[in-house]
Length: 231
Image (cartoon, rainbow, N blue to C red; front, side):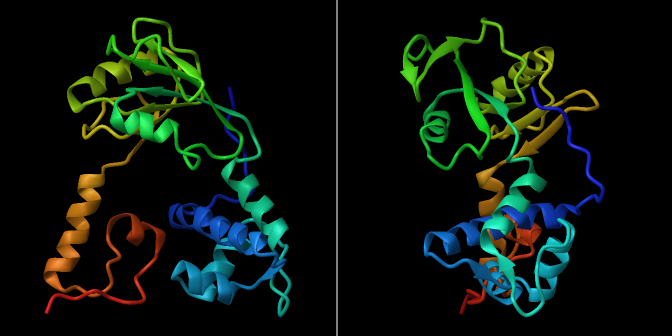
């Protein structure tokens, strides 16, 4: 199981949230055969200023060249190192309904270095069946001490599942269930709630507040370049 990485400089939460966007941009650049990219180009695609890009990337160390931009391969690797993608992580998923199956079967679900090690559910129609190369186990089976647990259960089952995760000594939880969880100090929970994001989006749409930059987009510091307004 991975241990926390020590860094000489702590990155801010907005910077951490934007780095995967920069990495995705750089990977697209590399796939097209472009080996250099500058802060202006990154900023235009990410929806932030070039100054913000330079400030964010400065936290990863000195590797850009003024006037020449960033080596795309180095940029991808530096971001991967900062986000811990160069390490190995075990991931378990609890709840293999429609959402859980969609996630584990998606090619974009796991970051580099992460591997899916176990799937759990209570549905007898799923238990014992192979999904994404793993056999679905009952929740009564022991949960391995993985790095990350992903909850895709109904809301009323989420806390009971969380208690099992905590008992398995897992300290990072990605929660897709629409339920606030109670966890002990030292356990990190990240909530992904599509209904909340949709509500924020609808607020901006219905109030004509300009760029649709609430919720996740707002946390990334990204604003739409083509604001959608209600007439």
